[in-house]
Length: 509
Image (cartoon, helix red, strand yellow):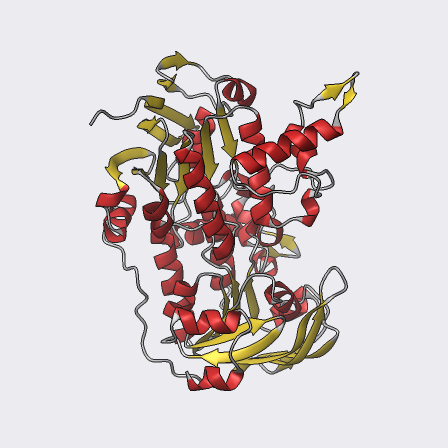
């Protein structure tokens, strides 16, 4: 059987940033009407390669062909003219504008010289229905879910005539339900002839969605294989260059005294609605307690109140025996709490600061001399942490925004764990990380537990929760509705997460 013609071909693409070679002679081929996954570790060069395709970066050497014709893509506008659209991990939408206004922005339909709003709405509605995207063109972007916002980005690319669609880590910000819906949408686009590059590091998703997989390792192509012929262990080995332990190995839990106590907590969200309602939990030294739940059931408000970022309406919070209810983030930190933030870019890092400065944010007072910061001491410590936590793509002087998302996450984790807190609150700690980095983070969290620290884990990944947790608490509508052992099935967890069953049922499970 003859293979379909090529929609996109990259030959020996090389891109350097100073002394760092992000892409080193990379070859990649995308057939018409296929989903081709681009898989690799954080910092392997996946996003850089696609930024070259989209005209955001110029390659130092190599050739690009679109539809068999050689091209030099000079800008995103040029890429769009060639039928290439890209959906970035961090969306580029105007929140106060409607879906239709965002989609047609820059290519607005006009009537008598004015914006034809009805025409824009009709155009977007027809496009949405044709591709099964199900987005209301009249809704404001700020009022729709993250998954819906991603669909708006896809619609915008399709509206510009894209028949090659590049998605950069598209599931990193989605819930499990939104991810399943996206998979259905992408398969439909493929079946209608769209060629899709799916950048990811999630092995299960790649095997589910992709026709073929190309793996990058440290900027080089290490192989292209049919997705149906590869299991997760084989893909992980290609990514990392070694066998990867896909399950967590840990000794039996030996809980000690309570180090985190939350009693009858009530918290209001940004809309003035009650997000946490009478929630109580305890985490002992030497254990990992995971909170499982569908996103939006009070997890964020719970974490913010524990970490001093939101003042609770009522209740009590104690860290290592110190009452920190209503205290600010610095007082909570001084009481012995570390926080791996859910959103590394908004809450975990100062993106324009160097890695040295970001790594010193928690304990900058330790790097002072005569009341002044000691840059040499800070840089020396940063060098140690960057090596210990395998942060790639930068030096101590590199701005944090220059790193890939996964390596930014490693910086946050390095800073919080290295401070040796008595209580560690880890909110989505492996979001955006590749399989090798996930293995490393899991080992570190277990090491924190084994060192006698209390770890509170919040994750949307049920496999991660079941692998790491000693106890699982299920949250629904701001309340803990049950406690389950890590041996609980996904069905048992799912029933409680959706509000079914009872606390008694959970304990009996």
